[in-house]
Amino acid sequence: MISDRIRLTAKEILEKEFKSSMRGYKQEEVDKFLDVIIKDYETFHQIIEELQQENLRLKKQLDEATKKQNQTYGNTTNFDILKRLSNLEKHVFGSKLYE
Image (tube, rainbow, N blue to C red; front, side, top):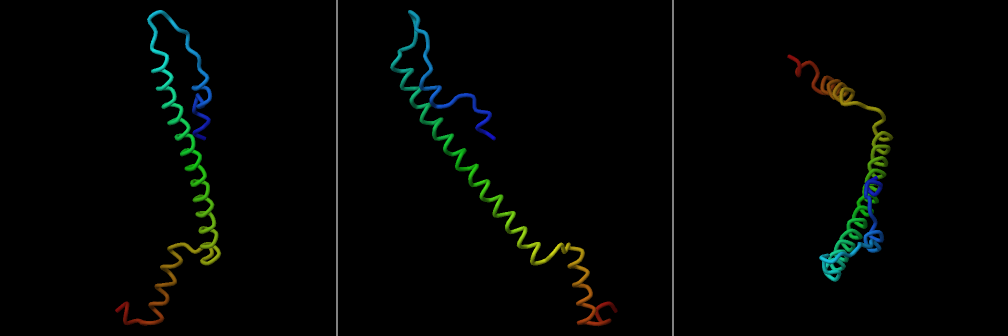
């Protein structure tokens, strides 16, 4: 899963403490920037969750359609269909088709 590869959570970013030094950055600017990062991070996490749910839904939908198709047509292959079509043409058109 994608969320397994993400190293930080929004909460960890929010709670991160940095040591201050004499010539450090302005704390207010850093805090505002981190707030933007946290909001984006939460949005990304939400989007990932939604896409994972949609992916699962689509996989289930595909499985259901495949099962329905198999029930309708059995395990018929394209070769089987072409063979049946050829036999039908022979029956309908007779030898005229192959002269």
